[in-house]
Length: 73
Image (cartoon, rainbow, N blue to C red):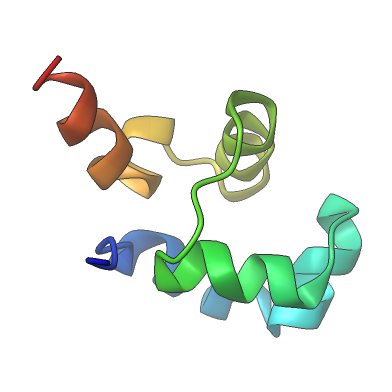
């Protein structure tokens, strides 16, 4: 399975602090943040928008792999 590239998500998370801090503030587990950040899991739409609002970045830039795959459909 190919992992997604989510450099902006990782950079934004590092600017806020640890994975556990971000997870706590978003109401999800640290493991879930790690899986999303590493590209092994893609969150649902609502959580994508939570990340977008939290980091102040467009969803399309935080999860480019998801939107690249949509253009193939």
